[in-house]
Length: 328
Ligand code: SF4
Image (cartoon, rainbow, N blue to C red; front, side, top):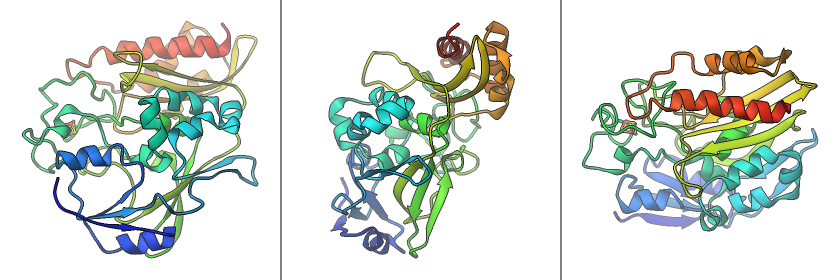
């Protein structure tokens, strides 16, 4: 591990000021991903700003609009166990419980979960080319072992997937990310605009400016319908999604009024396609409707060899979730 300096912030404003103008500064909260990356020098921040002791950032509060505001320091385990989340946003509780382990969930935070880095094997191996770790060096996953990699939204720069389960549920729930900028301004970023596709800058996972601090995530009131989260992985716990689906389906007597679906394990960001939801609105919940939705989700999908199985797997997982949610 490379040497670094450390400061502990007492307020969010102080934290932003400590990071302002320092390209090598990083915030640390739970540290469940960042510290691992520092140990193998994939991340080598010059300065760490510890936000763990900032009061108020660990609260879960109702909003005046009937939603929920989740402080950035709320631990994943606490969020999954919160009675409001369990009763009104079960897709979020289930996604959290599908991630990591109990120990990690007790440490990992809401903001950190959104910012965790890909688990692409080559990203963690400094002996291999990786555009995300070292821009311009290439992508060892293309032509390498790519079983866990993306089938949509990828390009020749990077085929990694975003690893978060929580973010997939938040994408289906239309969450908003609140931030504090280093200059002191605040902004609200719809989660649809938060995570990026690789484009020409695969090293940048999120649309945050240097030094911008996540302070909270806000959920609007939950939409009507059954909420489900289904995750397919190589083992029953402590594994990342090969394919996951967060679905909120409002159906009656076998007809879908409206549906929301977000996917993990498919792309560089939680994947949600409006055309897939349009394909289901007002239709009988049957195999033809499920196929039409899957066609839209997977438009342009392309496997890399080892991950080809994700394309038919996505179809099957989606059909199973929609059938269960619609009660058919
Ligand atoms: Fe790096 Fe992305 Fe290629 Fe993995 S897929 S080796 S993270 S550039």
